[in-house]
Amino acid sequence: MSACSACSAVIVAVTAACGQKGPPLPPIIRTPLAPVITADRRGSDIELALTAPAANVDGSRPANVTRVDIYAVNGLSPKTTDLDVMKYGTRVASVRVKAPKDPNAAAEQDEPAENAEPAVGEGLDQGAKSAVTEAITPSLLESDDRHEDNSRVLLGPLAVTELRTYVGVGIDRRGRPGQFSKRISVPLALPPATPPPIAIAYDEKKITVTWKAAQETPDETVLPSRAVGPLFPDVKYNLYDTETAQRLNDKPLAEPAFEDTRMDWGTDRCYVVRAVEIVAGLPIESDANEPACETLEDMFPPRAPKGLNAVAAEGAINLIWDANTEPDLAGYYVWRAIGDQELQRITAKPITDAAFFDGVRSGLQFTYAVQAVDKAGNVSPLSGRVQETAR
Image (cartoon, rainbow, N blue to C red; front, side, top):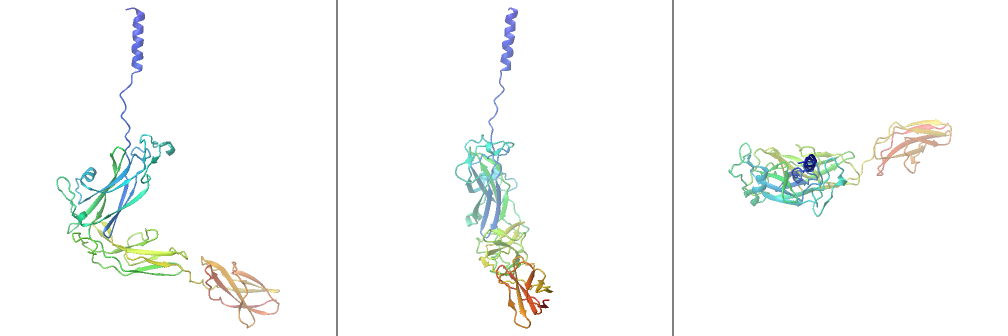
């Protein structure tokens, strides 16, 4: 073989080696992050709230998710995995979620969101919240979800206190589960009795909500008899605003009373209260009592002004007094009398300054008083009187 032929062979070999491709890359699998699941036990219901995932495990978005499933089991075994809960438990809810048409057309973690294909279709927006209620029925209490080895967890110091445990998971376009949520457990014990009716009183600074103490015996009419009652009743209370469903107290109230300082005249305030007990370290609320409502009407006058002084000038008398501090103060009325006559109001509308210049005839003695008025038209008693003669 000639030298030229040998060189050509080497060049072909090098060229072929440079153009050779490596093994094909595996397809990208977008796995949705875990949904957020919470649960509250109220009376004979378990109220579940979920937040749909909005991103994938690798940080890309939108999430490759078409629905969120919630599963539940009673008496969870320590050996039970999340997949076991999904396989052997009860699916109590399946909430559809808007999904991208092409899961791979997602914005990476460091890319702007507008680079992603938007989620479309029917269902919950990604990152939005939804709620599901599961009623505690005889069939729910009789369900006997077990691990394959039939092991059970018994909680409570003296008796079995059944727990129902929930876990949520997002399902992708191919029907594969994503990350599982944190497990949430609620007791299946009897709830405390519903508290008695609410009484409402208020003044200009606060609303006082009171009720009688709840009975310490659980309400056995709410749940079937198989439910386990609380072992050591320690009833406390949660107060709710019915308009917003917001709980007003930071922690359960030991006493049947609460002071609400959200004063806004003309507003309706409506409340319900639920008794709450802690069983196996978890709260159980009673059913709510009947709502009690009150319309806040300003019937409270400001205090009488203090420190009224009169200073005589030529053909005039200057009045000055201490300013009132009420937040709804509209101003002041000025009252005047000549000599021993009856006081007459000399300002048709409230004046806003705590001072008044009164041009009068010289040599006459005048008596003055002032009166505070608020924005609702409530007037204070008259201030102390002062007398002065213009020069």
